[in-house]
Length: 124
Image (cartoon, rainbow, N blue to C red):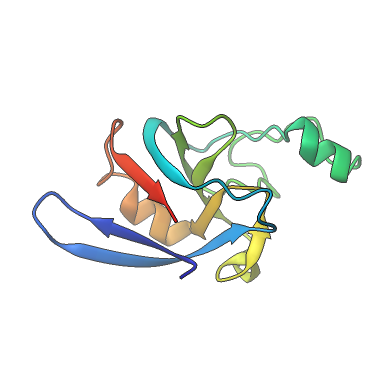
């Protein structure tokens, strides 16, 4: 559905449009869990990202222009898979990520305080 569905402990429900991975090969499915959260996350491209695009920088500090993780990030227990914001709003609703689930910055900021470390995540 290219959307993140959130069910709160009190039974309330929220729906957030999202970006999804570019290809089936980059798509991971199943159960995961939030293992850490970060406001103003820094970004380091994976080796596979750098192989696809050698012009990528070694890293981008949190809050820096062009940081693809946006304002907030929630890290899954799968290495290099995150739920994060994006400054590039054209990506939302599209197959545009290298595996992560991207949200509008205002949506990830709304969701961030609601989701605790240890929250179960299911990717379909």
